[in-house]
Amino acid sequence: MFSPKKKTIALVAHDNRKKELLSWTKENKHILEQHHLCGTGTTSGVLSREAGLTIQAYKSGPLGGDLEIGAAIADSRIDMLIFFWDPLTAQPHDPDIRALLRISVLYDIPVAMNTTAANYLIHSDYMDKEYPRQDMQADL
Image 1 (cartoon, rainbow, N blue to C red):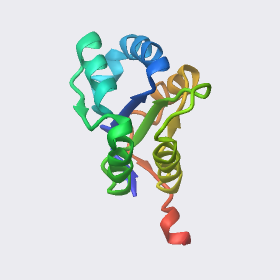
Image 2: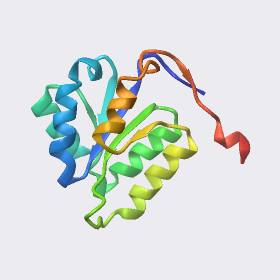
Image 3: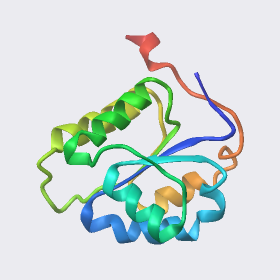
Image 4: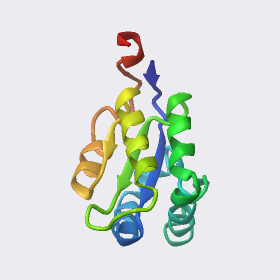
């Protein structure tokens, strides 16, 4: 399995972290616009309007968007997940969030959960290169 040179990046943020993801997205727009972007419904709408990026929108997280993104990862249609989740607020769809994080690990997708980790990923030398991912399914 390979992540292509032009990545598909999923952008997700819980309500209390949307402003932080928006700020990070604006700062890195010049990099992000070189890749395919997708995300959960509300987050995609905010980032699209406020940062001026083209983002494929899935459903809102609580309405199944996290699961849709997880399915896209399992189908090798997403190469990276930027997920600014809120560790201090209980989420009604917590099982879906855990499933998304689990599938990201299972399919060897890099995940950033905060600004620093997102910067490490987006500014990595691997961002603009094809990258071989581990096929963890082979171990099952």
